[in-house]
Length: 299
Image 1 (tube, rainbow, N blue to C red):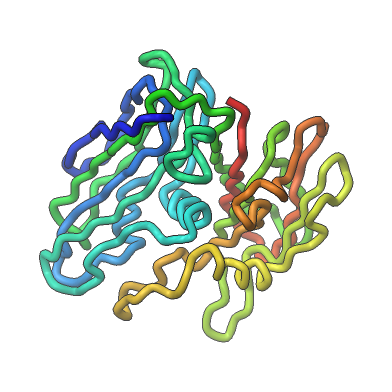
Image 2 (spheres, one colour; image 1 turned 90 degrees about the vertical axis):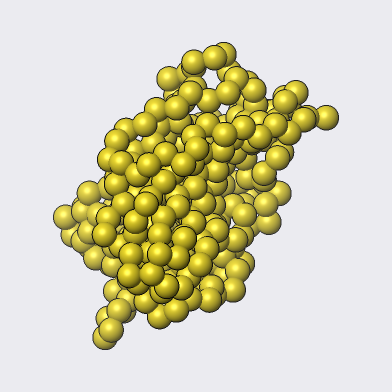
């Protein structure tokens, strides 16, 4: 039976523009919790304004990237995995109201799972690297904290890896192929687009997606964007309560291609033994795209 140990790696560090590497403990790790705090400046700071303090989060283990996501993509990953939006407090417009946004940096599809977490590693061989920007004019007295949840005595057989490809605009609309990580089982592919429907527009950055393994469609022949958005209801829960200026809590431009809908691993996309793994993206708009892959990696 594993023992839980919580430690604080960073405590209320003042907001600054910096690249901040932090060594991780040597024991198996369930997850990290990254917390951003600040005070409203005159009006309420929106989710987009607060989350922009963190540009990206990387976790490097023995020279191998385990997590590499921009903060908005990390928000999407947490919502996908745990079927709840990250904590965002005091959605009010009161000047100087204290605000908190906490993002979980996960190493398993479930929290506190001794079978699926980051394995033990010698001291100095794994780090989290935070790419930060000083909070802007919408929020004052910004600080950042980082907590670590270890599972002492755990012997995981696998862990979660989440990596991002920032794709440039392809040069046109229609079908384009993009390679995805090869060799492991994939739980989800996340798309974060620029274009979503607005007034008098029904345009999406991506209209449809398919998975192609060794030149053959596998599992997903064509998933339309509207259908993927419909299924997000089971992952993100009911609409959040916001005041008008807050906007949507879950980023409007994210969609998931879900290979683990029940959380039991029964439908994971297995790319082990394959020579080539791709997605076929049907672009509705010629634009850039953040494509994140959430894999299950043997320990």
